[in-house]
Length: 126
Image 1 (spheres, helix red, strand yellow):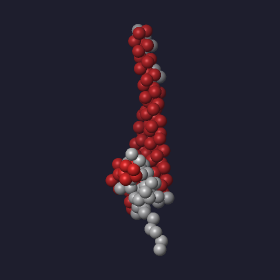
Image 2 (cartoon, rainbow, N blue to C red):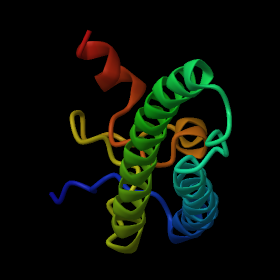
Image 3 (cartoon, one colour):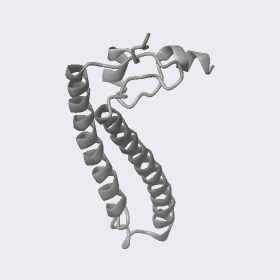
Image 4 (cartoon, rainbow, N blue to C red):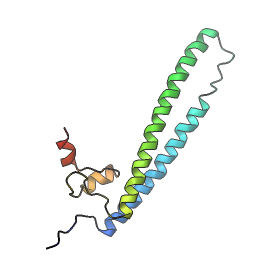
């Protein structure tokens, strides 16, 4: 007797692929926006303001650059995770929990398309 491996149908995979591709496009646009904000932070036009204000502004600018950098890193990871999900769609392993081997719920995948664990497996980790 051959065990049937759990997997989503090709139609389901095509639907997930479209969701993931749309998320990648939006995530890349968001990343570009973060990077452009980071580049624009380099000159806030405070050159002609008072020295005290300029010191505050520079401190704020450093914090803003760090925050933007963290956002960019997180966004890049999100894009990598989405691209990995796309790869799993292509090789028809998408939506299979890496812990339980069961299918991850469709609703979960629509909300978190890069998920690799079911809610059940996530709860076991706690």
